[in-house]
Image (cartoon, rainbow, N blue to C red):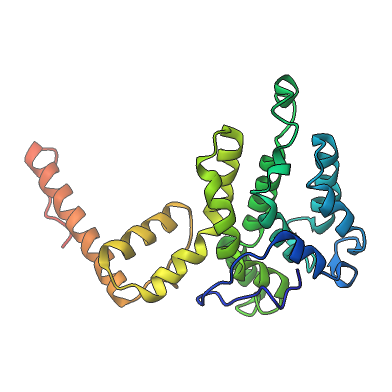
Length: 256
């Protein structure tokens, strides 16, 4: 679970998600910074996330996940913990004992929902909007000064690969948590497409989606994207003018 063995570049290929035991065994948690010091207690808490007792898993989630996140910030320990959580999402122990207590399930979150919620919260803490806010306040070198956030962002594709299967989970809570987590994790895929793909339809659809989610896409558009967007605007203005002029509501000349 060392950072160096799992990092990748924002536009390069990403590694396969390692086995959770390999991540746990390869981690020197005591060397990783957390909001409250270092991560000596993390290995035990992470192991308990696979306890067969749902109550023990819930306590472990508080101990492990709350220990590496604070005030919407990414810490050194956040990155390996995120990889470990992604690696255990499909482990059967994360659901052990939950289906036997249906009434109790109405009063608490399934373990999978808790883990996916945490991935989602963390992903939003490192998404494009967060980077843009940092750059507005601290300049374009913001991300270079935040290596832990950059490391998490670099791992978004491999974390997404673990989240994606749960988009069709039978449990609605798990399914919804996976969808919320998937949105910020797919930003990497959108950036990669925009950096490599020339297909007009695909580029327009990705840019439209990012804009709908509130992203500033000005730095992602190329000259052809801008020309296509301006053409669509002129055509829309033209259609609006003819529709309005035909009804007699106004007869002004169109603005072009």
